[in-house]
Amino acid sequence: MLLFTVVYGILAVITWSAFAYKVRDLLRDPHNRELQLLCLAISTFATPFVLASPEVYMGIDRVLGIPNFATLLVYTSVAVCLTSFVALLVRWSSVAENKLRPHHWLLVAYSVATIALMAVCFFLGNVSGAEHPMDFDVHFEHVRYISVFLLSYQLLFTVSMAGLIRLCWRYARAVEGPWLARGLRLVTVGAVFGLGYSVPKVVNMLWDFLGRSPLHYVSSVVAPMSASVSAALFAVGFTMPAWGAGAGRVRDFAVAFRSYRRLYPLWQAIAQQFPDVVLFPPVPRTARWRVTDLRRLTGRQVIEVRAGRLALRPHDDPEVDHTAQDMELLLTRQVVEIRDGQLALRPHYDPAVARAARELAGARGLTGDRAEAVVTAAQIAGALRAKAAGRELPGRQDVALHDPADGDLQREVAWLVRVSDAYRRSPIVPAALARSDGAAAPEPAVEA
Image 1 (cartoon, rainbow, N blue to C red):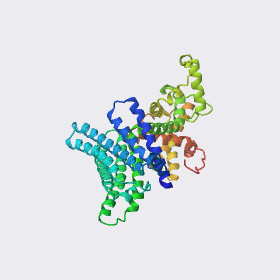
Image 2: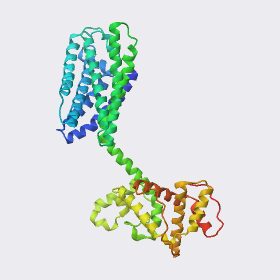
Image 3: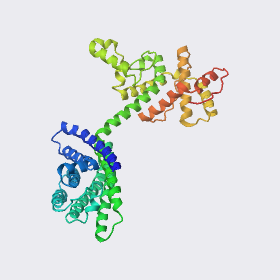
């Protein structure tokens, strides 16, 4: 019993959290019928995990003075949940097909009729005696009317799960939003686990009508655990379109910010030599700012709010001001400006640097884009040094830039990040510059 108390408690937290998450959307759009049905379905799916906990189950019966009455509450709550899911599927189907088919009405009517039949049969049957929070189905399945109560409930559960599997899987392939598709696939998996609850119980009951079933343990322990997994997957799957988009934005920002940080040393070096090609010039600092440096950023925000945004505009740091708001813009800006800087550096490229870098990269076993990134980084470092010294190699305007991205921005970012990492960390770069100058350069020990 302790196991079920713990598991049901965890699932109650998960499912009620999902309900709280979706009810916010319902409060913003209270007349949205689909949100109404979804919130009703999640809440009635979450309720049984509170009521079915053995301690709560027996506490309810003690208060009401009716043995095993909590079973009616639990099963009715799940049946209402299933009916809500069925109604939601009917609405999805009618929207997708631009009409409501007769069998859709029959499916909803069947669900409603099953709930009424369950209530009647429970009160007609006799479930008095000891409490059976864990094995109610097995203990009372031969009691008159209770057998009908149990079988009608399990059949409704099975029909509903089968409908969810068929429709959710079909819609997952048709919808446009990636998070909606993932959520529907997760609901499909949850419905499969739902069948892992109802099918063993139906088989166990029918087997017991013919003889002694060997599936009592499966019906009492394994099946409820399968329903628990189903509930958790439903809670996550039906809310995934809402929170998944936010999670995706956070992930995209984190990826873009990391690329921005890794590109910064190369971009800064180019921006210092060609300030005209950059939108915002590099801001001198003793240390680069980080997202985790909240104290400095928060303090700055407080000062700006108190003093007035307009009054402090001359003192704004344009890079910090725009980074958190337009990370994708800044990352695109870096790529364009690095490429512009490479083009502007063509008169300063020294073929000796490229040859030396390629030889050293080959000696270290680097091939493909890894080798080309080191060569490109060495070329840029050498050209920047030549530009700073005022040295220019006439006739070098035809230097071809290595570009494995073929116009794809994400591949371009990945390529330039690799170049920037080599520019900042690879020992081959200074070794190639030294060798091109005719100096004896030590072989690099490691390759970053």
